[in-house]
Image 1 (cartoon, rainbow, N blue to C red):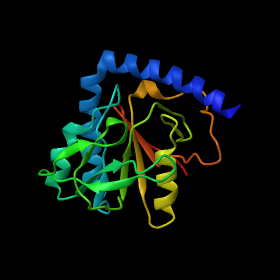
Image 2: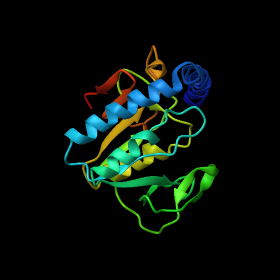
Image 3: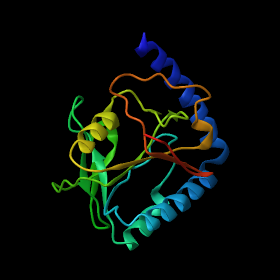
Image 4: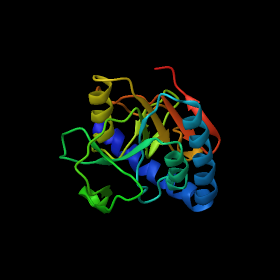
Length: 192
C-alpha cells in the first residue's frame, strides 16, 4: 500500500520538477547556490561537505562548488556501493578525475572515503515536515541513519520551491526528515 502511494507521489513529483526546471532552471539554480554559499559561510562547523552531481532535472548546485573550495572545505560526492548499503562519500578536489559510477552518476576516481558534516541532498519532493521523496532506492535515508548514529550531521535538501508537496508525503519507518531545505526562496529549517 505504502509503495503504491510513493510510486504515485514520485510520478507526480517528477512532472512538477521537470516543469520547474523548464521554467526557471538556471535562475533558480543560481539563487539556490547563493543561499548555499551564505549558509556554508555562516556555519563554521561544516568541514566536510557532501555535494552531488545533478542529473535529469535536479537543481544544479555546481556553480557554488568553487566558492565552497575557496572556504577550504573538503568536498565529497556520494558513491553507491550496493542496493542495500549506505552511500560512501569519496573525497573530491579540483584535480580529481571523475568516472561513471552506479546508475551512470559521476564519482571521483579515488579510494579516499570521508564522512560529511553537511549533506546536500537532491530530491523529487519534500513536505512541510522536512521529509523528502527520493527515487525509491533509500540510499540517502540509510546513509543519514548510519552517519547520524556515529556523529552529528546536518542534512540540507536542494530543490525548486514548486517541489514542496501540498500535503504530507507518504513515509515509511526508515524515512528520515531533513534538517532544512534550500530553494530559490531561501533556507527553510525543520524542527526535527
